[in-house]
Image (tube, rainbow, N blue to C red):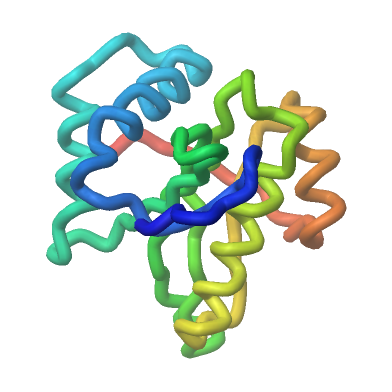
Length: 156
């Protein structure tokens, strides 16, 4: 990724590359901690391997300010049988606390939407916690609530 000539404070969003491993690990570990998950280097490395492998559907965008990664979006294409189309699922979105309020999440979502348009997907979809008031204010300004209820069940 070439950042030559960027103005101070410049925000960029691009696909994660191999040499950003350590930065992504730092951000992803912080995201997992916020989600209440224990420190788990094996899980972190597993997800990074998915991101880097063409055999897996998970992709990653990294947002950087002044060349310093400050946020990420994990995404993947999903099939929509009822419409015979595909959509782009935004699995995870995280911005480091030090970079919040600087348009990072908005820029990540804009890039995800652009990728969906370029890829021929007809929707970008994601979930968030009901208690995520700040995130929901942003999401409400960018998208329409789907009006569905999500259930989780353990495999039997």
